[in-house]
Length: 142
Image: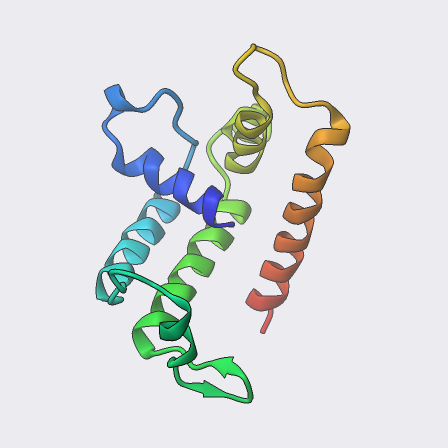
């Protein structure tokens, strides 16, 4: 989910001459990217993370408590992911490469030697996608 979302952010925020391939996104997804970037700007990132810092995080029942800034960033990421996998791009019903998910999977499967991963090599990634899409639908149905 984060790699896909990062690819979308990179597609929108990278100059056209610096990016070899851009994922197709609609205006809604572009707005969600902006919201994610703004939310992430509010999250203080540690300069160095070690195990002792993780043990000091506030926990309830063993679960780390998110700050309001963390929660806002997580929800922005979820919102971006949901918009990207459910949104449509003009012509996407006829052109499969106008779908950001299929474009991402195709790019993921492409190898430097101009071949694609075999079905057995890409199946684990597709299983993760299946899980993420189901979890996203359940989260959004709340």
